[in-house]
Amino acid sequence: MRAIIFFLIALLSIACTSSGSSSDGPNPLLVAARCSQKLGYHPCNFTLKDQRDKRVSLYDFRGEPFILDFSTMWCGPCMNAAADVQMVANRYGIHYITVLLEDRFFIDPDLEDAKAWADEYGIDEPVLQGSSDMVFPHPDLGWEVNTLPTFYLINEEMKLVGIQEGYNQRVIDSSIEWLLAQ
Image (cartoon, rainbow, N blue to C red; front, top):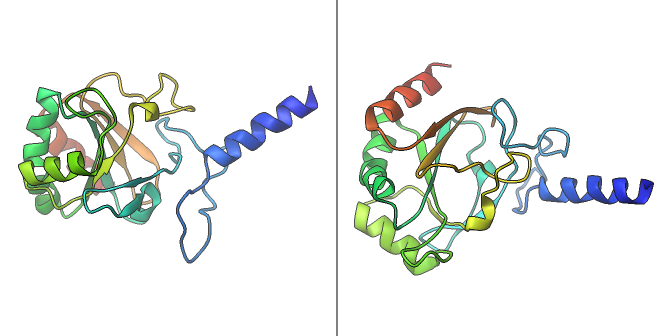
């Protein structure tokens, strides 16, 4: 029984550690006891490639508030949100990271998909090649994405402080203004 518990703790520790590298080592916030996609917690790190084929980690944005958008290429409201990404990022001076979960054929997006999405909507912000495997109905095991798109608001302390399901530009603007005022 102890071996099973030790194995589960080790597995959670691995899942919640940075897969990228940085000069100051792994982020001390990413420990199994604190890593969760629940509001108020530090989210588990991930590293994905962007539309420039560059590796981007969630914790690359530590120290500044940002918005994390989970979208698919076949979703109409996701396309509407994508059309506003660069305007929102420029207006508020924040990073707006898009994680594409599926392409138009319901498979994991690749570099061409991320480039096409960024080009079609004029996005300079990171457009990441994600996977539907990132989504799970329990926030300790993955990102809860019940509606497309789903936006997570993350503050400068790398805490999840808000979730917006579905796309409404006025609500997104209000959410970002609230995030920046904290």
